[in-house]
Length: 594
Image 1 (tube, rainbow, N blue to C red):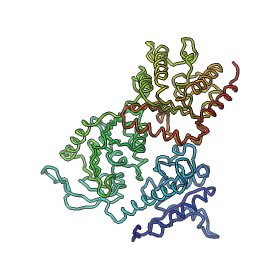
Image 2: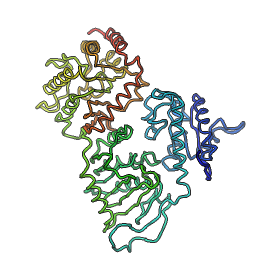
Image 3: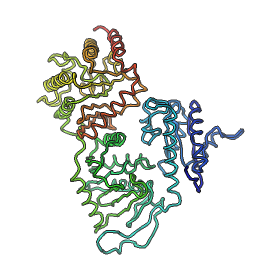
């Protein structure tokens, strides 16, 4: 049994829609033990007494709260007060380090990850809705929520009463002149950490404080004009440097701004077989594409990491963090900060260690985006075709019918679909002839492998309806064929060919998912083939397309397993071949005449 906390309980605030009151009551019951143990004291608006001014009471308790639970549902997002007022203030407190905000996903909600709370770590596990598929029962989901809240409370309790930082002498540096250093114990307050960087070698205790100094290092990098050397980072623990901290959203924003100013960033990651870690890594990479600087990720496998964890962050001309696990073997919770002085031998040693690690690491991905010449020379399309033709099961998630379903007639020399391709080079590297050659390569691969391997296509039902009604193509096809709208005869041929594939090949499967199911899937469009290839199509913040190619087997295997899990979570009716064919036949009959 957990021991009772001998400190003041943390003040917990429920932000929820009254349509979800039954969920709030259930969560309140689940947290009774945590409250009896003295870790939390909870408040919600049903505690407002008769005659009290409700808005003033809510505002007062929200301001004084230390843990804020956002009970996410479509009703929560539709509520002006919950979403626009309470959530905004909650996030401000989270960013300032005054509170921890924890989203709890009650019901499957369309695209909640694109809202301001989408960057926060949600509960239950992996942000799966409590009422969604993937749980044996709701008790299992609630247990995951309570476990996560308990972890947050205990982490916050562990920081209470501890010094934020202490200045110490260098431990392993060669003897040197230390007249510019303070060697006697000193202290660094939390307020100082969030405003200025230390000017001395400084020890920092607590995960939140380490994350805060890491963000400050990046913010100082924005002031540097010369970028001759890259910023160096390692991620060997089970989460990224600031992941799960109050500084995480700021870290992501500042890191992108640093890249925009021209800094290059070298990031070494330890890979393992964990789906969440691998997918989070890919998400991080996606968010940093399309900048002036280069974000280069290299990886080493599990045996390359130190247990307990040890990580580095080096920002040339500013300073470095040497980070350690002191309480949990897998999570960073302490660091030594070193300012970059004229004779920074400690930082030189850290730099040599980083580059030695880098020599034993491999490049994780290649990328294509509009600023790169390889996108104009057809390397993007060649990479896609190469991955498509690898041996193994295929999973394709796309906002439209996939390339597998396109009729061969689309690639005859006079076909309107083929002629609509945007040709950017008169030598035709990405134009008519090369498109025909890649299509033939895909057909040959499909016909060779379909009897041995499974082909799974996942497509939104609404995308097929838009194609049938208006001829609208998927986002990536619109980019390659600007202004093109599929003719009624092309629409008819496409739907008919898709039905033929479903009828003729037992190993070809198509799932037509609804809007609710889309929220459960990885953002963007992706292709996984075998255990050696992942191709992810995504879009930069300015709306331009950017793509990742990953051939590292560990990541590919994780995505294979993840894709199979997603397929099984699709509603049975939406992946039942007979019912899918019947629905497509109905859509085929709706296509207007020429």
